[in-house]
Image (cartoon, rainbow, N blue to C red):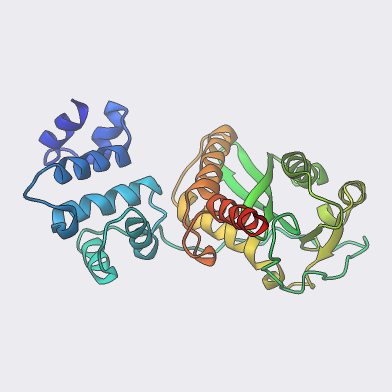
Length: 298
């Protein structure tokens, strides 16, 4: 009934506003429109009209909370069986002002001005280790709130680009990155020998974090001085988070920012189409890999 009410009043108020007031999902509304259109015999799925296709586009865009541009929306629709050309997707999105969030630059948080030991660059930009739990990468970023900065540390399994550990705090002390690594280790329990790659920040070079790596049987690897490309996958993760989700948002409290970040991390791992992985999610990519290993062993 709520969806029907929205449809009857969409010329009076924006759909997104109505969904918020009625406490219903925006993507759910557009998916309802798609289902309703597909039930009509005059509108078969193979020949979607512009209005039905636009509903699909809006559902995919709302489902990503505005992160997806036309390439990922096109890939998502293809994955759902909607056979449509990318040019048509681009045309409709441009016509209706549907686009990914805008880009902006962010300040680097690394402080390598210290006298702590530096690990060699074992990774050497080999960003495709071939199997899970062989190489993890880590980094820190920050999010502005009215209460002050919120700092986020993440650990990525480089094979699937899955975020396997994270930690958030109002500071950039070594415990921030140590907690993210502990979470990753307890979730994955990798065999000894794993390479952990990071920048030269004091948090990663310090005794607490290095002792943790040693205790887990991990090898420390670090980027060359001032070279962010040596840790490009993690830098890409921050770009996706800040450009795709957080750009333009304002947070009154750190708790609000934390909730948004956790929501995005869940979306990223389970649903976000990753271009490096052939436009499937990190979780699906890893599950496919394990399925292939079982098939080989059979």
